[in-house]
Length: 371
Image 1 (spheres, helix red, strand yellow):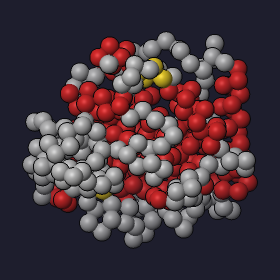
Image 2 (cartoon, helix red, strand yellow; image 1 turned 90 degrees about the vertical axis):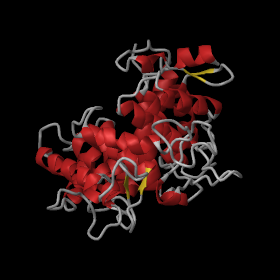
Image 3 (cartoon, helix red, strand yellow; image 1 turned 90 degrees about the horizontal axis):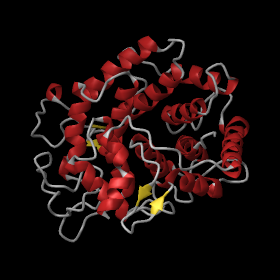
């Protein structure tokens, strides 16, 4: 397993290192990719998008932002009618305080973060530069830190959340780091390093970075939802009172640590990697089953892409061409009308617009390389 780890994560030692192409050389794989993307975007155009450009507006403008980000990442321009209508719809949620969210929203961090990713993709001509600058300041103001009377000893420090209490959690903090990176903050920026304090405390790893009461009760190296507010894992508790790790949060934790500048030699990265090697699976979200499956696919793809790894070696020594395997799984799960949907409705994954957005974001990491 040690040798497998060195092969699988050699790219993490120097993030700029590029591993040679070992996947995506077949014409069949390329056809599957192009067909899946074309069918999905056709579904969004014909069935998903409303006349005003919104997707599932009854839920949150974040769904429109997420789907539009995915469409833009697949090569559509801001002038494409499918995209232009959605951008116009999202612009109505730009607030004077710099946030991008629905009025009286309980999710200003999440909605602003996802909108920042969307407007960044559409900002090639600078049309959203001022909006993004204000959104960056808004998000930093929301982050739990000294301005909320929190110091580094507080388990909420550095995190972001939502709800009435705005209790920070790893999912929201992961989106925060993505948005901060998109607006130009580097790994050493104050806000991202503050977020790393919180991310480290979401890991089942006792260290100088994590002195929460949970880490020693289930020291498996994986990640859970939050140590704040008494602690919570969506996967439940262990018999010892620890918080169970699960894959979507562990990939979110790994990605966040990479974006915060940690290398493969860091004990936190090593421990997360070891957990993921023991739980490599694309049929389920390990620890959660079908719950949040497509959110999992997105975090899985984004984390492994960020790691610069082309083959992921599991704890049995099996080398996985993860991009090809993820592509194969997503193609097999696509519906006849081009959408994706999770039969498990938890976290809104019964909504084909949201899930198709997640799937398109995930499949982008599977684009076969041309020879």
